Length: 477
Image (cartoon, rainbow, N blue to C red; front, side, top):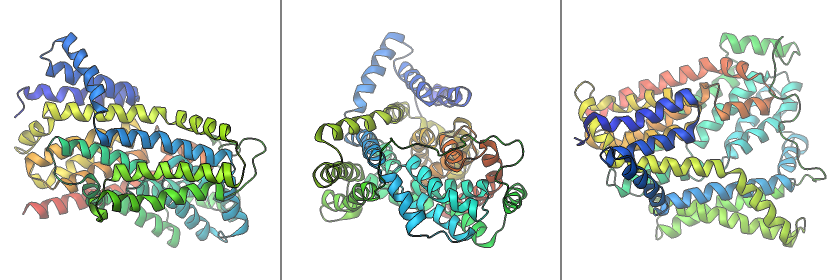
């Protein structure tokens, strides 16, 4: 048991409460971490502050943490360059005008889901592209904006949280790597996460429900009303106020649409990830370093982009390429700050032995087999309240691993439960940035989007919870 006893729960309690009531993740993580170091310093304010500063510096001693933060910054540069050179416009033109994939309501929805899934490198890019490509066909074939938004967000979140070669995967591997360093779990972070995402039960349930609704036309009452309204040619309910009335994001003036400006660097990154895993794993992909592989991939993507934009197509000068790259980096600074603080609070949680304390006390009233279900519910409530899946899994994955290590629960199932809970809360939270971007991309009234997709998300969460209970109990017998 932790020598601090129940006091060790104060930092995560403060973090979660502040996040819930302030809806601000960055100050909540920072204050929670400082509170943890204050406890470790025997309530000495000066020593606690000094240790907090040193703890922040120590975050950058972890290779996994540094690589994850760098990846987050650099992917912003790649995305920004693709946008200012017409890559986004080109992809929209390719899919909507030339390929003419969307030829009816079902194919329009499947195209929206496919784009959200395939552009898994960055969530906002995925949603905005999907909305821009399918918005016109959706209006033409009388697919309601609410239905389109539900399909896009739920498919996207399910895939982004399960793919290991994007920012989500890099962040989770970095968090898991810190737990490996602390001896809470053994193995390669990539392999651990690869096994854990198999238990991302909410994601799998969500994808199944999306396919059922698209292919069968099934709808819950609120969505059915929206679909009937759209069938009459009325895109918004009376009194609805969409977040935007035009396109979600205007491209720089004078930009010429060219899909290759997005696809060339994107494909280079996707191809380089398995190569990086193979090289870092000495010929075994499953033993490779995921954080290193995705960092190599984004560096290669930038290099390929430089050759493509500057040397081959001559659309950017040497100077303008690097100026635009830095602008893209700047857009991702808030994410880098969140991840740095997430790593910091993960470290202090390990030092406080929060998982050990929780496991010893939870065990007295909860079987080890229900640990994953418990983590799923807590993560869901936290994500719902804060609107952030990233902030949620950065807190809940370390706690879940520590609880599992002491209680004897399956750590992979618990990690999957933390991820599932984080994205479940994200789908039903009205303050989720993912939900807001989805409403922007589909030109929806935001609360109409949240309320119409709520029943589907609750059904998927109930299925996931049953799965975590059944699997956990079966493993404990």
